[in-house]
Length: 178
Image (cartoon, rainbow, N blue to C red):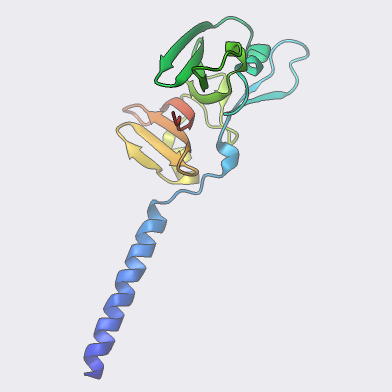
């Protein structure tokens, strides 16, 4: 009887260890500081780095990147989405449809980047080998060719990877709740 109890107890401990070890192995260690994109300042003396992130107004983007973008507005249910589409990078701001503020005041809810001019705070950019991201932060949640790193239930960074393992798009997202 004592031997049976020890066997069951050891089996239960092994099961618990496998569950926790499996969860840890699939988890990532990407810090919140990666939730944004950087680019070198343009114009002026060229010194400094500009950070773009969720929550900033679209006007901030225009202040630093200029007015060379295509603007698009969409109404989806109760939301008004405003897109600033620059070559290689798109910023989307969101407001309630009833909000009458100008589009440039919309807070950014996502950034999708295919430009080599931008990088993550850790330095990853378009064209880099995804294996470098994976070595630093793990694999993330894999959805097709996209690796998603969730910070919580509403915020993530994603890397879309091509067939040879190079980063072709970086996304910084906040889930939109309407």
